[in-house]
Image 1 (cartoon, helix red, strand yellow):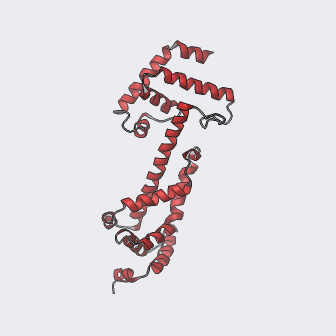
Image 2 (image 1 turned 90 degrees about the horizontal axis):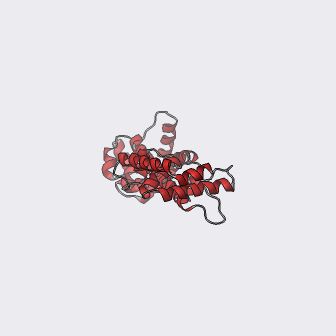
Image 3 (image 1 turned 90 degrees about the vertical axis):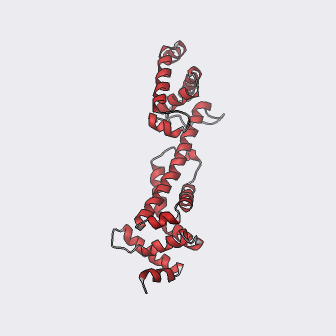
Length: 236
């Protein structure tokens, strides 16, 4: 009996045990046999075996958690997303379950290729949340903090007077902007520290191309440089 036939006759529990053992060897950079894990993926993806899928989630959740934590630790504004780490993990697995088709599995030559796709799903999940975080930061810049709350945009050491002045400055700049595009470009550039290419990606459909972003920025900065109201505000 071939090894492939033996794999197909193994129970889920036996496959899970062997997959866990071989995965530990894989992460320890030792010789390992990925066929047991691959068979679990085949049953989960090609046969839509729920039990096989649950086993895989348990098997690879620690690895996905490590990827997610690495991202959240690099983003101090993460709490603004109102999203728990578990939500990132669940969304990453959901993306994988939805988009990693039997055809993609058949084209995968190794377990590493499958795990790389799972990592891409984690990246997609965190990117979406990161985009929502930036939009929320942008909205806070437009509206200011709610009554009785401190602005999340404020630096920890800034005084209430400094925070109020910053909010008044952005309201004045918005008033002087010709349209929403100009304000988005200026705010995203100076408050969110986004590059023109990042602005284009973060606001899909808003701008035709990077050239338009540069033009909006240049036009508004030129007008602001001549604006007497802004000069009076800055100089006091």
